[in-house]
Length: 111
Image 1 (tube, rainbow, N blue to C red):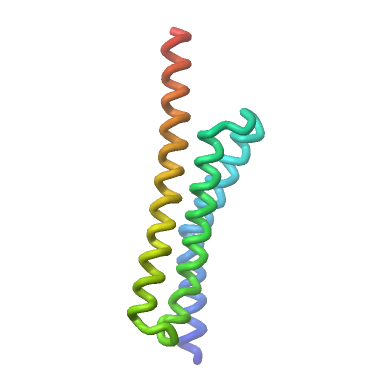
Image 2 (tube, rainbow, N blue to C red):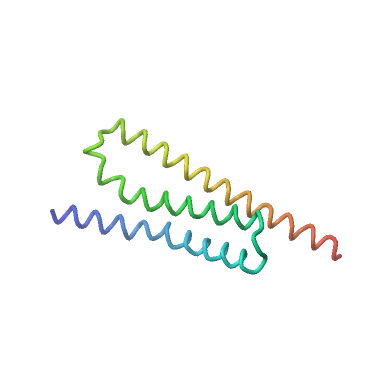
């Protein structure tokens, strides 16, 4: 039982390495949307980071059910969750690319 609690605590602490930066990026996306308005690139960044956050949180709890689900079901669910994470990361990357392109375009016009 003690090793189970230690394992859960270790998983929670290590998950903070993924969750805290994601929360930071969500804050940046919200700040961007508040300053610029509801723009496509800001929404893509926000939605992408929310998906990444959900994936990070779900990974923390999925390991608890590996025995009851069985390895095949766990693999299927893990693949689906990883797919959602991929979509979130892609949306975030597209949003960042759109902002970078906008900044470069505005700087080249100003020069």
